[in-house]
Amino acid sequence: MPELEGPRGPIPYTRDQWGYPRIEAWNFRDGTWARGWFHATDRRFQVELLRFAAEGRLMEILGPERFARVVDRNVRMLGIPNGLAEQQAKLTPEALKMCQSYCEGFNSAGRGLPVACRVLGIEDRPWTVRDVLLVYRLVVWFGLTSLTQTGKVAVGQLIAGGVDATFLRMLLGPGAEGIDLDACKDLTWDEEYGLPGLTLQYGSNAFAVAAERSTSGAPLLMTEFHMEVARFPPVMHVTNVHYADGGYVQGVSVPGLPVFSAGRTSHVGWGFTFGHADNVDITLQRCRDSSRQS
Image 1 (cartoon, rainbow, N blue to C red):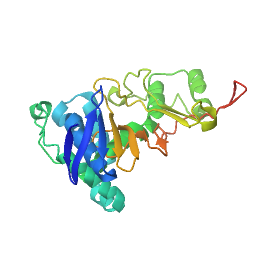
Image 2 (image 1 turned 45 degrees about the vertical axis):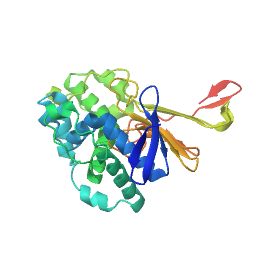
Image 3 (image 1 turned 90 degrees about the vertical axis):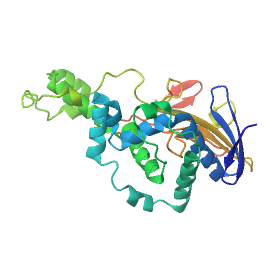
Image 4 (image 1 turned 45 degrees about the horizontal axis):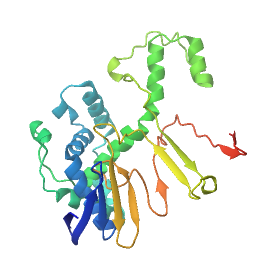
């Protein structure tokens, strides 16, 4: 079995048929260190793109593409890179140690920059706690909170395009009251700020089934936050970590971050959906005698 030269001794690992690692770590700290190592080894190019995006510098490497302009403009307008030192100072000792262990593992990978990074002129910089917080902010905004704007942008585009008042009332219901379409007749909407073409993959959902309703007698959780693992290239990275005391943690994470976005241990399972947006529908369903009651 291959081993990593961890900070406190060898860390054995294997890879599954898809290339994702199963890590045999002594404890949580070693497991976090190893995950940083694998993120740097498997996804360094992705991590560097995330760092440039979170710094508002994506156009430096991608050129004046619309996507890069929109990301850089939002990052700088929102001040995502600002105040990171203050935020780092507020981390709990446990969170700080986790981030530091992850960064130590990431910087120990020793493979250097991928060819794609060197072609784009990306410099070789160590990964720091600041970068962890920076990318976390980027993912939280663009992956979750930015959806609070989606509905507003869609309505603005419709009004600028001359939407019919009846259709607007059908779409918004009581929310359409007070919108004076005559006063908005001269409204224009720059395509640069409009929504891109949407596909059916957008959105997210999660389902939980109580233990007494499952065949296994254990609770079930399904999370689909549409940051796909199976597409090429995948967004998420899958890791399975087992500890010397018999515990484990397995799940998916964004390369560059030490936390699992969705995963499970022997005690708990968790996931994320677009829970920070103001356009979320939550439905509770109860099943009785094979029939559904909402």
